[in-house]
Length: 134
Image (cartoon, rainbow, N blue to C red; front, side):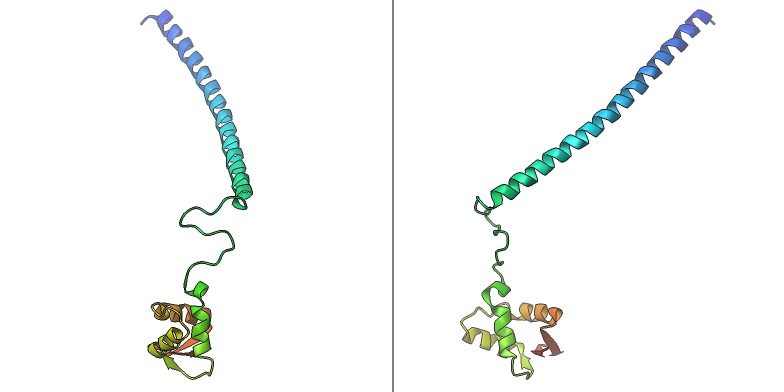
């Protein structure tokens, strides 16, 4: 065994470990800086989007903030259904659909709208396919 060679190796290992600790510390500091910079970029992008929201039209397939969705609720279907049940008498879904058509609205989604209104408590389900005003 060459003691001189062993001592050199131990000294080299010690130096490499010291350098490794320095690099790890530096890496941690850089990672914190990267996180901070990434958060800054995200905040700036949000601020830019907020500023542009009032200026630019909404992207295709999106609606402007605060705009009503193009759905049954936006077309007045829910209100027409509740109006059809205003007298308090239970009605079958097909009768409600006829009342909706008479008001000039598309009755294709009456069943879905009835389920929605029942969940919201605006109508109550009397039996399968029969509803009354809540």
